[in-house]
Length: 115
Image 1 (cartoon, rainbow, N blue to C red):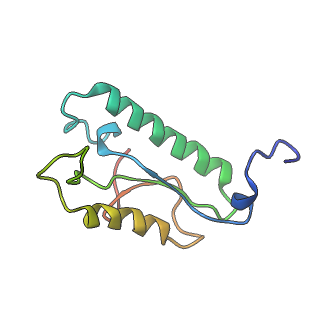
Image 2 (image 1 turned 180 degrees about the horizontal axis):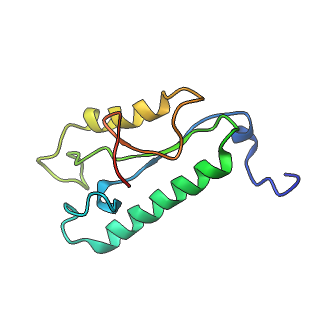
Image 3 (image 1 turned 180 degrees about the vertical axis):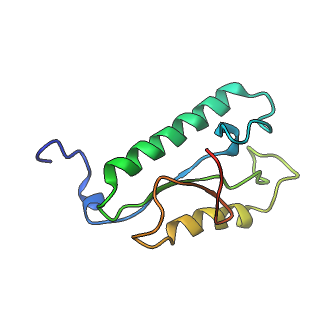
């Protein structure tokens, strides 16, 4: 990788980066983390990484976004959450964005949400 380019060969040819995050790390959604501060901070760190990567890869046809699938009924999320298919649909939406679509954003259910 020449000239300080640390981007892998696959990303130099295009692609997508979709970080699965959580509203628990959002400054705009301060409630709902259930008091698990370490989890919230780790999600906030992932969100910052998303913004930094988006800036680094801007103009290369590699959109970088974060997605919050919402509370999903999984082993981690527990019962009562939404079906896995609904959470996965948010991730798939971000994967299907056009090359010139948004980058450096945070989305849930196809809609931008606050960092």
